[in-house]
Image 1 (cartoon, rainbow, N blue to C red):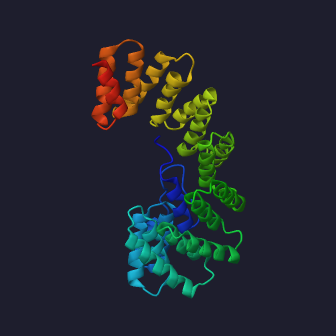
Image 2: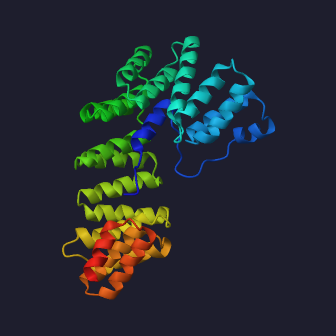
Length: 332
C-alpha cells in the first residue's frame, strides 16, 4: 500500500526533534522565513529558523541552518544542538553522522545535564545503532527528570516495537497520548498497529486522528483503509468519497473503491470497479496496480485482448510486476 511507509522511523524522528507541528497542507511561510533572508548571519535567527524547519520535517535545510550557525558560533549550545538534531534525523544520514550527532549531544548534556530533549535525542542515536539497553538508560534518565515527557514514551515504544514487544510498545504510545492528547501521529501509528492485528480498536484511533486534523489525507486514508480491512465496505467508501471532496487528485481513493467493488463485494461489481480504475488512470496513467486490476476485470469478462493490453501497461510502468506478467502469460 502507498501509505504509512517508514512510520517507525518517523516516530524516532519525532522523538529526536521534540514537538511535532506537521500541517494538513503545505508549510506556511512565517516571519522567521523572511527574517533569515534579511539577517543571514544572525545565529539566533538561524537557530530559530532551523528549529522551524525541523518541525516541518525539512531536515536537509535544517542541517544547512544548523551547520552555518554552529560554524559562526561553535560555543553556542543551541546551534550545536540544532546541527546535531538535523544530522541525526535526516533520511540520508550515515553511521558516521549518527556517531557525530551522538558526540554533539553528549557535549550539550555536559552543559545542560537536565535537558530532557537532548537525553532523548542521545537515546535515539543508540536506537539507530541497535543498542537498546543504553537507549533505555537515557530515556529513563529523561523520565526521572520529567515523568510526563511525551517523546521519551514515544522512543520507548519504538524501541519495544523493534524488539518485538508489541504490547509494551502500544502501552508506551498510549502513555505518550496521555501526556499529549493532541499527538496526532501517535493515534495513526497506534491505529496501524491494531489494524495489523485486525482489531476494530484501530478505527477509534484513526477517528481520533481525523478529529484532530479533519483535512489530513493521511488520517482520512488510514480511517478508510481501516474500515476496508475490517470489511466495513460502506463506511470505507463513505470516507473515500469524502477524501475526493477534500483532494480530488488523491488517486488512491478512487483505486481503493475499485478494489472494494472487485474483490470485497459479493458478487463482484465489475462495471463499477472498472469505472474507478479508469478514473484512477485518467488522473495517474502510470498507476500499475490499477492497470493490473483492470486487466483482471477484463479476464473475468472474457475480454482477452483488452486484458493483455492492460497487463502490458502494468508491466510498462512496473517491469517487476510479477503478478501482471503471470496473468499475461496465462492468456498467451
